[in-house]
Image (cartoon, rainbow, N blue to C red; front, side, top):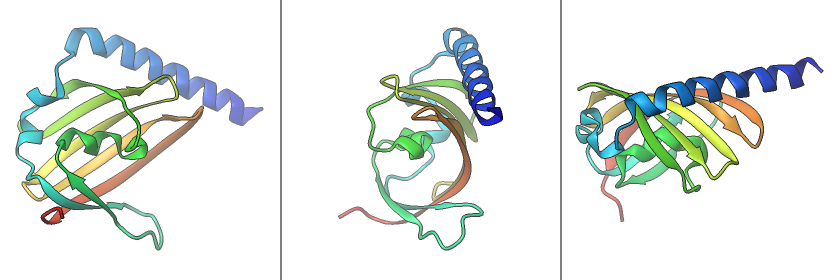
Length: 138
């Protein structure tokens, strides 16, 4: 009962925030200067605080994919809601089954920190991750 109410509140709060921010601040993800600072190539993503979880490799071509780590394999629409030279916040929606909001803070061209939250199959998720460039894609 409490869990259901929490899910509903989180989903409603996220939906209101996303709807309020998107029209006024919408930009294409290609216009986010922070993402342009990241090198393309092979990256490893490590979830901060996760025990014994191996870093996940990602061949990063589209740098905005770092915003939807939870839904990497889904086709999603992305909107930039805040952007500056060092960070970008991206909201995304995946065909009605999932949505999220991620802030990517670019530390160097080879290191980014990511905070992500949203809804996945009706359940809330939130995590922090670190992404490091480790080489070229094969």
